Image (cartoon, rainbow, N blue to C red; front, side, top):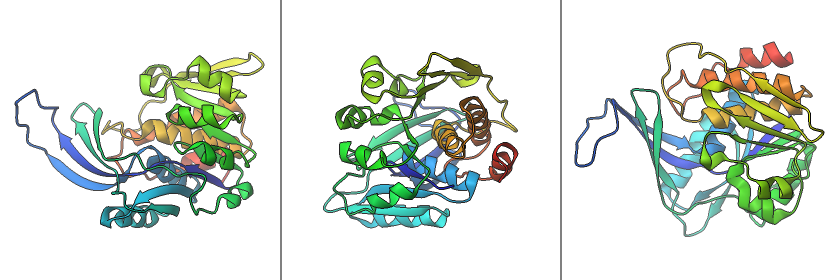
Length: 283
């Protein structure tokens, strides 16, 4: 069973703060670290930690940070296929991780996403069992459609609408406006399943035949650290479980457990998910 992620990656400065500063205030960070993050990268990290293997098709900047970004993901055990965007600096971000476990993000630079005309091995996707699409252009969406299972995030809304191809699953949020699934996207994507997370309230799924279901949020297995990447990990686990042939309800249950596990880890680290995969999918 092989699953790939098509999406974006940013070089992220993670600042750990007791709380966000008020206007004009100085707040001292209690910790600071850096590394590759962003929605596509976090999904690939989670996929590698869960199943032991992950392929990530992305684009990076033509600078030292771009090189470090690709190297950092490979060090995390990810098979990185990165197009280098000539003359473009690697996109950066600052993630503010506060004492209540929340996160806020500031992004710097041009959005760098994989494109269908990039010199990536797009035909190789045809050999995958599933693809999670987090970002890309319309050409990347069409290339990803070669797989038996295509799961897409609303973050790729514009390209999915422009591509004019159906996806199998849309996975978004019922509470986060940035992850909302709107009627135009539904009409363009024609998904077999729509999955909407609701944070601590769990979430719901709906099939094209009208069948619906819900899952209950999984309690975190430890102390809450931060929620950076939890939704991305949920989407990755959902894709992997569906690609392995699990029914939608079981795939959502696994994804909820994976998302809860990430709440207890300091971003961008992702680990200790293999036992969850074995328990749900048998290895």
